[in-house]
Length: 303
Image (cartoon, rainbow, N blue to C red; front, side, top):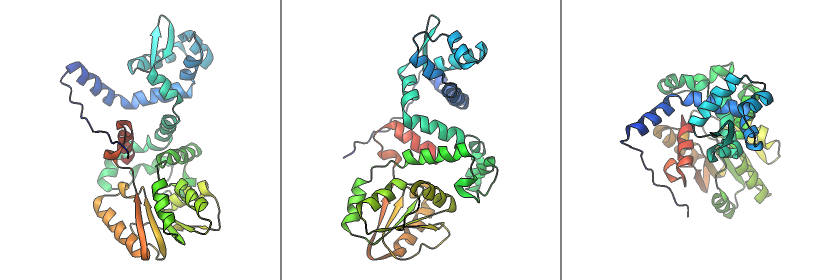
């Protein structure tokens, strides 16, 4: 049983704490770009691997100017990423974590390559209830699916999906296999691990992946061709779900919908399942995470 955290709202009355948190929120976009630059120019790696990482050494290794290095490291110091003793720099525990945690590094690439420019259009997206920032990739309709993304953004999205969908589904897999289904539908926002695990565990089951053109493009790219896999372009909000499933899995989908849309999808899903079949829902819930960091990440992804 997973022990969930109890959400604690910070409500400090210390004016210095309030000022610091306020400034971090205000300057968060610039702090993020500073971190991305430190990683891009291998400055954190250089500091971690050398015992004499002075500003001069960093300038020589990166070919950046002294001014460029100084503004990056000043902001890094003020965000507890690096320490300076005399003229030498070292990484804090936070700095080491940012440099070495693969999930964090993947999230940084995803935010930078996929989300950042589009997030400028958040207000329009909230009003119009659609992704108004897609045109920053050069086309508002993304008719070419994942292939319509620039190479860096496409790879960052694939890498991000691989960790975002790393949900523990062994219990779900066990429940599905006990029913010995012939046909399993998966309506998903991109969890290829679930489909691969299902096919590996039962050599007779057939898998039908349903989703938008973009989602199917990503699934094909990750899973490849298999005679037991069918990829069906289907927008579950507007299209009928084909009948014939023994099991239908809604994989990390409902959390991306509002309540009315979620009810609409559940009704369609139940109608597509054969008599005696079942609908399973796999979702990470913000308030059911074992750590506040996971909850924060899920909340941000919804934006």
